[in-house]
Length: 383
Image (cartoon, rainbow, N blue to C red; front, side):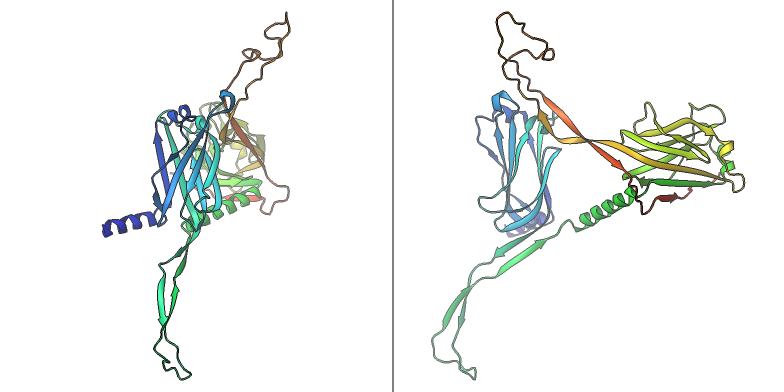
């Protein structure tokens, strides 16, 4: 018994995230009006017991989509930075002090957007990033006897005093993760200061002999204009869509929907266009004639990228229900649909489908740049 309890304690001490997967999650919406809440069994986290999930379904207003609130109960006296997950997208990160009547609450989340339709499951998760907990030990009795100036006991009567140890434990499980996050944010900040990237390739006259049509040479991965994991792709002999004697140049920018930038080879500069059928790829198949772009004196090929602005679409963290249309008053002899409503939206109809929203992020390099030009090394060698 004691060894099993010790093993469970050690296991919870090394655990900082707990996920609970609910099966047959679609039944939650149908039983929202008949059941007050569901409470999970208690579990341990970071060496502390008493954590539990509570799910409180709520029926939608006027027949709308059902919502649900997620509550996290924790050990009394614990103050922590907690990340609470509801499904794959909904998440909050908040400092919270737990008590007998103060759980951490994630309110009014749509069930339809959180349930995995393929497996009919709902994932609940909690992650402790950092925190502190005050634990008071068992009270103990302390006995002492009065003493004189010399330290000798005086009398036979002992004075009893009660007391208890109070321990305050600090939890910092995410220090390496926080440092990595700070480094990534610093790299992102530095990339916003970069508006021009230059890539110089040596021994350029050997490129067409070493790379046949359809073979490419890729630059190191870099960041610029506030966007990460960019890469220049050069086809010295052109890709399969290029004309003879022409080279092709592209920029691979995964995740970007649109990008306004200019590419240059030697003295030829062209605006990069999105490539049809290749998401996140911008450039031109017939960029320029290769022979006229090589610097004959140094046998180098100078390639450059200048970023103006870009747009990136990120998925929304929650779904937005379409509002119900209120009944419209009609007069005798009027048509059912007067033409003011779209087809399918007659007077008095109700449309409760869930419309997924999205957020568009725009980034542009600043006019005042601390590091305006970035040099990329040439990583290739003729065979």
